[in-house]
Length: 297
Image 1: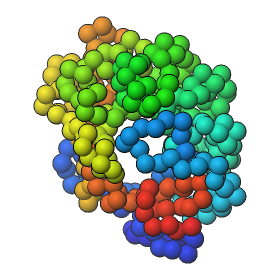
Image 2 (image 1 turned 120 degrees about the vertical axis):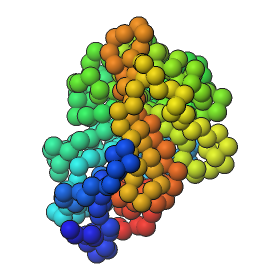
Image 3 (image 1 turned 45 degrees about the horizontal axis):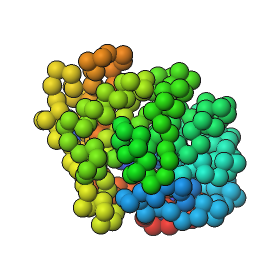
Image 4 (image 1 turned 180 degrees about the vertical axis):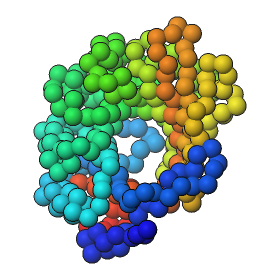
């Protein structure tokens, strides 16, 4: 199978293997593809674990068009993941990115990661229906403590619950919870978080260990203690490890005592972020291999 592809005159390594499943041998990818991450930069929040705060006004629409033209002419793009910074900070630019992506890839799975800056505005605009996943960064069940982490005001529990019935499918809204010392950092806090999710009618969450990208992230790292959590109401369903290492993932199902729906729980620990290169990232101007890898355009 083809191992590399020419993108803008540079040879880029293709994903060759899927992640291993429960430690089994990695299976080869049937046909080459990329996932494209689009990052708009700049943010209303000032999270201590984040280093991505430069100006989103440096977005170059023409270069994004060229990237989409080049990729779609040469390789399959399965997902476009829009993140930041805060993608909805510049609202017109956010909508333009979604609509442009749809023009080139009408059937691509598109997702948004947001801190909820324009939460109510998002769900009053038909644009939200173009997003297969809306991943709300939510690092604590307590509204006040969550805003403390972001160092800005974030959507309240009531605001989240109010839009839960508007979802295009039952997993459209997902939470992404960074595990941080002093916040969600032990078994009891994780279960409190999951029960809070149940109360606001959201049933999909990713628990994420901080990537070692700055001193704060290293000092406040929390690992997932799997054996402490698995039980009658917390069941492991999948275990994945990247071919070549650098990243591990686990999938679970949680059954709350005050049962509404099963909650899907996903845990990820990317401990070698610079080695996970089988993705492309567009930062508003440059197309890179991985988030901080070599520039190819």
